[in-house]
Structures are given as C-alpha cells and as structure tokens.
Figure 1: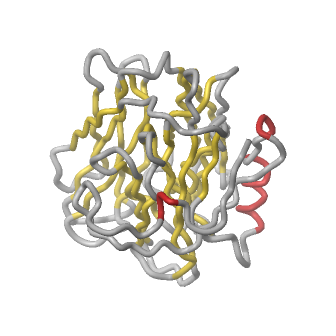
Figure 2: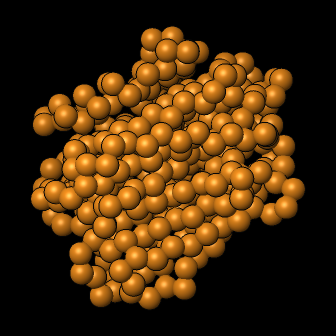
Length: 330
C-alpha cells in the first residue's frame, strides 16, 4: 500500500526548540515540484520507470511530505550507525573517498557530498557505489570543466546491526551517447529497500545524476542526463540495497521538496523519519533540470533521523527547477 498525505506530515511540521543535531527550527518546507513546460522527455522516462505494481497502481505524488510504506504502526527495527570518511582535499580532476562499516554490522544505506571551498556546482558527485560484501560505500567526484578551487569528497556508510541479510541488486544501461538514461533495480521476493546508489562510467564530469530515489519501497530509480553538448558514450548503473522485513516492521519513505525556482545553490531536508523508526538510506531528485543542475550533497543528519540534499547550477540555467530529498526509514 502507498500512502500519500497532502499537507504536512508530523515529521515536517514546525516544532519548538532545536533539532537534536543542533540545527535550529522552524524550517519552512515548500511543496515538492511538479514538472512544467519542456518536461516531456524527462516525464516519459519517469512514467516508464516509476512502477509500483506490487503495491497497486499508484505513483509517488509529493506534497509537503509523503509517506510510502507497507502500512501498520511504525516500530523501531533498525539500529544504524554512521561511518564518514573524507578525501584529503585539494584541486584534483577527480577524487574519491570510501567509508567502511565496522565489524558486526551490515551496510544498509549510502550517502555522500562534495565540499567546495569556493563556489558551488563545479564538481559532480559521479558515483555513490555500495558494496554490501565488503561493507563499503565509495563516492567519487569529478570536476565539471576547469576549476581551480579546492574541494573534498565525503563518503557516508549507514551500517546496521539488526537488518539483514542485505542483498545488493544492480542494473546497468547500454554504453552509448543516449541521454537521459534510467535504471530501475527491484528488490527480490519479499525484501524491501533499505538504501540505494549509482555509478557513472564515461561521464568525465559531464553527466549529471538527476534521480537518485526510491521506487516506493520495492526498489530504486536512477536517472542521469548528459550536460548540453556532451556527445561521448557513457553508461549508468543503478543499485538497490534490500533486506527482509522483520515481523512488525513497516518500512517507509519520507520525502520533502523545494521549488520550483531559479535560486542556486539550493538545499532541502526530507523531514524526520516517524517516531520509532530510524533512517537507513538517503536519496535526491531533480525536477526540470535536464542536465543543467548538479546534485552535490545527499546525506543523513547526525541523529540518523532525516536526510539532506543540495544541488547547484554549474552555469546559469535560467529556468525554474526543483529539488526533493528522500529518507528511507525502518
């Protein structure tokens, strides 16, 4: 069952006092963007890929906050810990960082971000690659053209002692110059989504992830666009991390959006996972960007209860676009 609630979910309403991670309230959440003029190509991809037949013929309609889940009362199931690791920094053409789960835990989710000392939108977060077998998340960044500022890539692994066994499902596109490309790996059997990831090959900082998002709780949707004028071959791999659902659990998705607008950079927060649940994975989605906007942050907060996303234009775009942040909650 998919539950879409218009208006604010309790996770997104204003509360008195600070967040547990010290970020002040209140925060105003706008309605998530819906595609507008010129979006036919992007929407045709999403209409083909946002299939949630297992839970009925419904689509993921975002308002100020959306819950997508199995129904029932949420119970504390996940016991996640965060592992964060950064590259050494500097101004390389490309760089990476890897976060590794501690012994006795399983990799259930991913996150990453690019930190620039000057400006924004100059470095593409080209890969957020999970490896369940090794318990690692590797994040790559690649400069989008010539950039002389210093930057750092940060990898984030969400690790859990309770959920499992975790399965990793991958789906890879053709290697050609077609844009956009979209992959939809599905969780097998009765398993459900805990996290996701993606990998670009041949993009050279000129192909931008657009959808890094849950497909309900049954899989993931990964879409990427070549930036205008890029004609080389490239390919996209999408990943879904999946686990059996323990008795009494009700995994779900919390999402919140900003825009549409022309401000850049822009960030948004998903809203909190409901009481009694914890975040296991993060995601982000652009609307109406068409290869003109870079997602450079997709990461959980310190209490592991909410997800943050940030995006920026590498060059003036001039058209309104929107950004959505997703939290996968167990």
